[in-house]
Image (cartoon, rainbow, N blue to C red):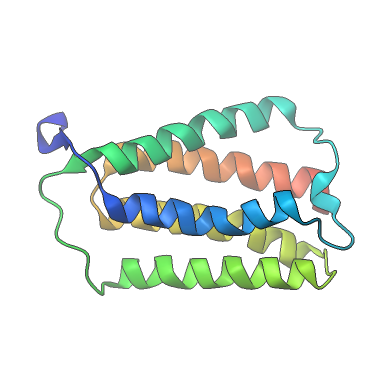
Length: 149
């Protein structure tokens, strides 16, 4: 399986990561009204695992290239990445309007994770799928336990 991979650089993975991070950078600088996300997390260990998997996911998406992948094109998976990004940005917009219900929190947690997961599958990067799945589960637990339950 590793024979299919080479070290390289996937600019599209980096662009996806930067696009997903833009609302986070805004949030760091400008607090939202009713900003529940600034509360202390009660899922510290899960958050640590999520952070490690996030780094592994982004690193493997950006620098491990499956030689059997096709170029970027309009595929159902890539369309899913785009839809997930739109849902994520819409969730941030609604969050900044002061809404903090379960749907908004799930939009902020699941949408970016699914975008990365679909991107990894589209790019045939099975190595990135593993940390992406673990990151998704941890991120969902973080959002649910800290803000929904």
